[in-house]
Structure formats: structure tokens, C-alpha cells
Image (tube, rainbow, N blue to C red):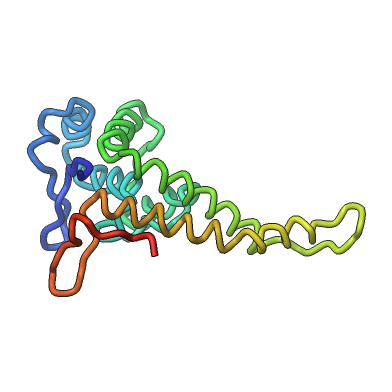
Length: 178
């Protein structure tokens, strides 16, 4: 099973497929922003897609992604406008699947932990310190990391983006539990 795709990329440009001509929120973007709708579609894709094969921003933390994407693609619109928010919701729903949501949730959690760990100052005070909390995380890290990687693999498998040497596909009875 693969999530619906709305856009392709050819020669460095985003190409909306035929569904973009019938999905009302995307049609309204095209009508209201005739000179900039392709950049808005690019923004929507970069904000919603978690596929590393077609989104270089998929690993940017979601709380930072909008600012980075808008700056990098030179998009200067009100991303809080009703039209853009409605289109974003539509694209997000089309891209979502069970494993997309699971992977996205775990990814957001790991991003938040990474942000905290990268800025935390250890406090060794026995009463008010944070060292035991950090140690507990480090102890559980392997399990969380394995679950994160498994969620990503399930997401890739669902999307049909796992590649094997020689362009082959996995056997239907392959067991990933080793």
C-alpha cells in the first residue's frame, strides 16, 4: 500500500498531477496565486512529506521546517491564511497513513529529545539535579532508537520506497525479525 502522491519532480521543478485539478483546496491555491502556486505546492509537499527520496527537508524538525523551507525556496506568503492552511490540511491527509502517523509521532518525540539533550546542562545536585533523568534516557536510548528505525522501515515499506540491490523487491514471506 502506498500513500497518494500529488506531485512529481522533473528537471528541478514540481509538477502537480491530475488530482491537483480536482481537489478543491489545491484548485483554490492555483486560482488565488496564479504566479506562485507551484512554489506553494512545493512548500506543501516539503512540509507534509516524510519521504527522504523526494523531500530534502524530511529530517528538519517540524517546529523549524516552515521557516527553513520558506526561506530556502523564496516563498513570501502568509502561510497562516485560510487558503494555505486548508491546502496544507488536505495534502497532509492525503499523505497520511497508519505508518506515516506512527513514524511522524516517534520522529517528533525523538526530535524533541535531541533538542533537549543538545542544550541541557547537567546538574549533579542530589535534590534538584537532572542527571538521573538523563541517565534514564541514555539507558532507554537503544530501545527508542530501534523503535524509531523500525517505524521508519515500516513507513518506507508502506510507501514502496525500500530499495534492494539490483532493483529487486523483498519476498512476500521475508521475516524482518532477526
